[in-house]
Amino acid sequence: MDRSAEFRRWKAQCLSKADLSRKGSVDEDVVELVQLLNGREQFFTTSSCAGRIILLDRGINGSEVQKQNCCWLLVTHKPCVKDDVIVVLKKANGDAILKFEPLVLHVQCRQLQDAQILAVRSTHGLEVPLTHKGKLMVTEEYINFLIKIANQKMEENKKRIERFYNCLQHALEKETISVTSYPKEKIKEKNNSSYTHKKKRNPEKACGKYITEENNKELENDDHDDPGISVTVFPEDY
Picture (cartoon, rainbow, N blue to C red):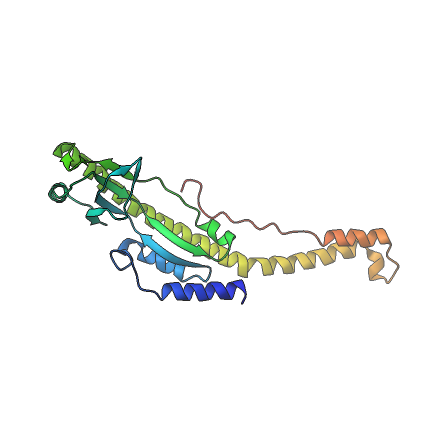
């Protein structure tokens, strides 16, 4: 089985499986983005999160919060309020951490050049400890301040998702045009131009005269011309 067929089989198998995330479905703010990728033969998504504010109860191992086997006190994909955080913090027995996590999108790509289109990384996050061994270490005023920051990041994250969707859609449309229409037209134009070029430089061929070995080498060199197609995927200020 060739690689393209194997990739299609793997894609069909993965997309047919049940959603094993905590929510059990794709987040509303990222549905269109996921559909755009899965609608293309060269991509399929394996997991996604549109962005969330979470409150975890677990000790810190160095600077990394281990989410596996910890207690999830609060999870929301929408802006939250201070009162909700204060209520669940009372249930914390260890080190509770407030986090904002931006868009996460895991995508399988057919080829390296397909993966390069999706090469976008963000450091738009937030992680702050609030309790230690169940004891609240900050004031409610500070918690309110943190929640405002997290909510602002959530709104900015939503704008970035929309911008990424638009840029990706534009890039994929441009790629489709380049692959299907542009090369064929350029190849035809190049062949016509190359034929005319050779005809002018070697009038002996048109008259049925002998062509020297040097002229033959010159013609072979002409065949190595390249149209030089290049595509800009995202704007520089993305």
